[in-house]
Amino acid sequence: MAIIAVPKESAPGEKRVALVPEVAQRLVKAGNEVRLQTGAGQAAYYPDSMYSAVGVKLVDDPKALVAGAHVVAKVQAPTAAEVAMLDPTTILIAQVNATRNLDSVRALQQRGITSFALELLPRITRAQSMDVLSSQATIAGYRAVLVAAQEAPKILPMLTTAAGTIRPASVLILGAGVAGLMAIATAKRLGAVVQGYDVRRAAGEQVRSLGAKFLELPINAEGTGGYARELTPEEKAMEAAMVNKAVSAADIVITTANIPGKKAPRLIAKEVVATMRPGAVIVDMAAEGGGNCELTQPGQRVEINGVVILGPLNLPSDVPFHASETFSKNILSFLGLLVDKDGKVTSNFTDEILVGSALTRAGAVQNKMVADLMGGPK
Image (cartoon, rainbow, N blue to C red):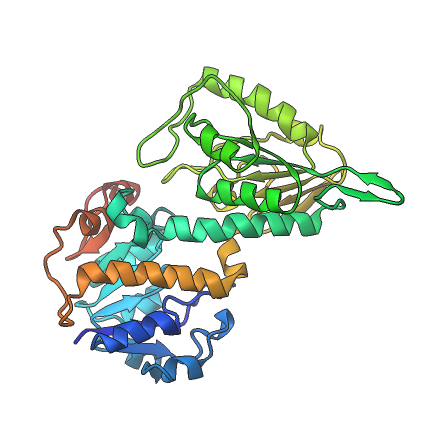
């Protein structure tokens, strides 16, 4: 029997929970013991009563919660104090965002914890059901459009009324990954005229399939793992000229461009913001990585000459019920690699998914990119 513990998230503003009752019930029925810190699901609208009804053990004390646990599942990176409570034999699963939470990585390393960072999952077919980046980006893309629509002084759809016709708002999505495609789909559903742009040529077909116009540029920046590679200086100049023109004309701009382990690419300069019409809105989904817009302030709302620039840091947490549900199903799939049908936790971490997502083990940082940021192998 595996003991799986779910602490209450401690990150400011985090409303999600790592396991929802439906998924917890499946684990309990499989013969595992599932523990939940009291109130851990409350902010996501999963009260304690829903967990106790499916056999989850509610625990008030966070130390007692994790004592003897084989696996601890979290949404976000643990604090140093939370790591100190874990037994060295515990396996931690979370979306650590390791390159931005090196203190947490160092604490896990020094404690000797075996940890898996879900954002490091290899982008292969077998890992799709565990892909928290995709599941949470889907939620974030949807939410970004609603946030922009609420800020905009215009309505998005075209309306024909007795007072005349109201033209639809124009929405530009920069970056056509999972978040960008969901943003495009959501903006189209709301009736906006939508354009999408991505440096990856393959994204054009996906953008058009959602009914949006794809901004064409003779550049193929397809990288590895489904991400875009960094552009050359010449390519950046070509991109900037086209994107700047589209940004200037848009009522709403949503930026989604991120490069794992690096600062977010700068797509909108302050000079371009100055050309936008008053009332325009920018939602910078790359704010946590420094922002795609030069004027973005992470976690803040900025208004400059009538243009509103939003730098949200945790959009999935704004939709905690379904964000938790999808995250929880990702965790369940990942647990299938660690816990067998008899509840035995594996000590064999040779599966390519486990190898790719391994963050720390036996006092060492397993991921090279993270180890390099920390100053080399430890």
